[in-house]
Length: 125
Image (tube, rainbow, N blue to C red):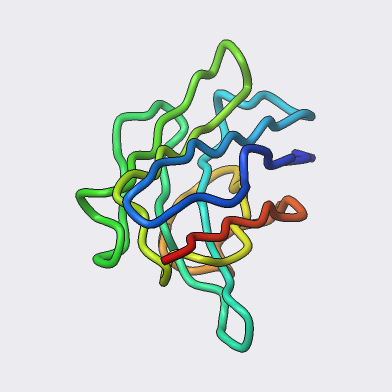
């Protein structure tokens, strides 16, 4: 089992930057694929970014491509989401998720087995 715990959320002005962290305890982190999702009030949870266990492959939604960067440090059992050029529409609760084994559809929430409780990101205009 993997227990992801997010941190790093907060309030930032439009155009600013934040870096989210997700520390994952439990089974071997280096064998687990990781993803970031977000959910704004009244909206469905949406895919943001994902990274394979080795860090060799990364995936991004069109809405964040070129602005957000996902990375991981397996020695620290941590995955990061660097968010630049933030926009008010990026405001949401950001969730970290983990998947062990095959990684058939990184963009789908149903792919992931373990979820964190989320961290709030608010971007003011």
